[in-house]
Structures are given as structure tokens and as C-alpha cells.
Length: 355
Ligand code: NAP
Image (tube, rainbow, N blue to C red):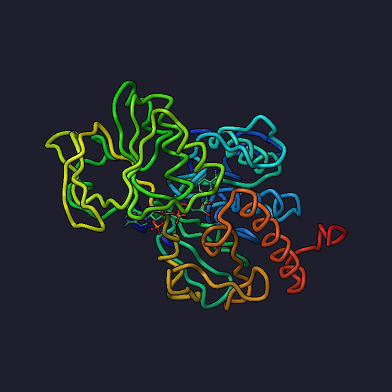
């Protein structure tokens, strides 16, 4: 959802965070100082993305006095914003809700002076430094970039799915599960996301049917056990969703048996699509190498083929894809960016003792 571009070279509009809040920057100064900070459009490092990778990079870069700008995307917070309970992030023995974890990371980054602007990137220019990035009609300039733009949900690509999105079709149980109290829902997919969505939906729905195209799940053993032993979860194996039924809201899904080709209609009030993610690399493809699936290719730990451009998190990692690995990646990219800026004489090495 790009907003287009305007105003290059002219006076830069004040940046307003999407939640209407002033950034909690330290030190907090007079309103004029805060306004100046808010209008900042150049930085030693700009971080693209505000998931665990981007915000951890922001915490490290801010603590290294690089005063980073985070262009966080309109879907600020990344995938954890549409995740329910996170039970495997170290330090939270009782688990933590995904949005709360992201809120904490965001506050932590802002505490050290990171400026976070919740806006999507429209275009980048990485042929020479300072690099330039355009977002929400504003031109940003920077000596180093950390790309941590993550990955987004993949849809089934059915016309009926698109037509009924928000009318019973969703990719976010955490956001929309509440609306399905005592109803029946279908979850499509066979990975951890599908299993997690299905388990979460049992808090509301009276019946959850997982539709999976094969005869075995790909998700982790513990999640499989939980889903398969849940009294309100049933699985339709070897089944493809070929149509979503309903005029104004979802009334069912048409399933095709992957083995026999037979079709049947499964009545349902909702369809949750959880079939994986696609990396958010579109604006970088002209400048950086991507693999066959569109994920960024990394060189020399966190670097890319453009000196000064670093990568962190799910935008390159389709193997681990965990909040904790993304956070670790953000840390590595920020330290590498800081070290690189110091080598160029553009910054003092501040975390040298941590290396
Ligand atoms: P995933 O592991 O790639 O699984 C995607 C699932 O969707 C697969 O079962 C796949 O079927 C199915 N699928 C793909 N395209 C489809 C289509 N067009 N129609 C029907 N089904 C389709 O993705 P994910 O579940 O989002 O998980 C991604 C990563 O995040 C994994 O590493 C996972 O462990 C991790 N994750 C962890 C947690 C957690 O620890 N709490 C939660 C969520 C995700 P096939 O199996 O036949 O390929």
C-alpha cells in the first residue's frame, strides 16, 4: 500500500507515527527538539522493517550512537503482530503475546533514540552513497541500510478468497478469531502456522477443520501432537481448497481430494489461510541478489553485493524463520553496519568491546 512519491528536495513534511504518538526518544527535549527529531530524514543507518530483526538492529544501532531511522512498514511489527502466544522466545517462561513482544522491542529501540516511522518503502536508489529511499512521499538519505523487511502471508490465489477477505476469509487468527465464537472454521495449511492458528481458534470456535493437501503435517512434532489430540480439531487430509463459498460472507469451502479428484463442500463460517510467506523484496530486486524464491542472498555474513547494505531476518532466512533468530540476525547486521561505517570513517566504533 504505497502512498506514491512527492516533494523530493523540498521541505520535508513532519513525520507522524501511525499511532499518532511522538517517538519516545532519549533525551526527550523541548517540543521543537522533538519536532526536529521527528522530521529527521537522513541518518548514518536506515533500517527497513520493524519486526524482531529490524527492531533489534535498531536497538544495537541506537546504542552505538548511530541514531537510526526505522522505516517500519504499514504492517509495523511484522509477523509477530499476527501471532498469538510466543512460547519459545527466551526470557518469557510463561510465554508472551506476539504484539506485546513487539511493543516492548519498539519501546526499547525508541528509548535509545531510534526514530520509527510506520511507512512502506516505495523505491530505493543504491547505486551510490548516500543511499536514498523513498517512503510515504518523503526522501530519506543514509550511509548504510539494513534490510529487515521480512516476509508476508501467501494467499491461495482464488477469486472467491479475495472477494471474501474480511468477510470470513483471514490470514490472522489472532486478529479475527474473536469473531468466530461458537462457530465453525477451516484452517488451510500443514505447517506450524496452520497448527498454531487452529489451536488458537479453539479458544473461540466450536469446531476447527484443518485442510491439508497431503497426508502428513510439516509442522513441529509438539504442535502436531497438540492439534491432533485436541477434541475440537479435525483434519481433512489430502484436500485442496478450490473455492470459497458464500455471497456476502463465507458459508463453506469446496474441497478437492488430491488423490481421487472428487469434490465436496465443507460448510464453514470462516477460512483462515496459513500456507506460508513470501519475502518482501520487491523494491530491492533491481539492486540486490535474490534466490529462486525471491529471498535476498547474503554475502560475507550479513552483507550484500552492495557495500553498506546489510540484511537481517526472514527477508533472507527461509530456513529458521524464528523471532529469536531474526533478532539475533538484526544484532549481527547492526554490528556489521557499525563496523563498516567505522571503517569508512563515518562513525566511531562504539560497540568495539562487544566484538
Ligand atoms: P511452512 O512451514 O512453509 O508451511 C506451509 C504449509 O502450507 C505447508 O504444509 C504446505 O504444504 C502448505 N501450502 C503451501 N502452499 C499451499 C497451497 N497453495 N495450497 C495449500 N497448501 C499449501 O509455513 P509456516 O507454517 O508459515 O511456517 C514457516 C516457518 O515458521 C516454519 O519454519 C515454522 O516452523 C515457523 N513457525 C514456527 C511457529 C512456532 O514455533 N510457534 C509458528 C509459526 C511458524 P506442504 O506441506 O505440502 O508443502
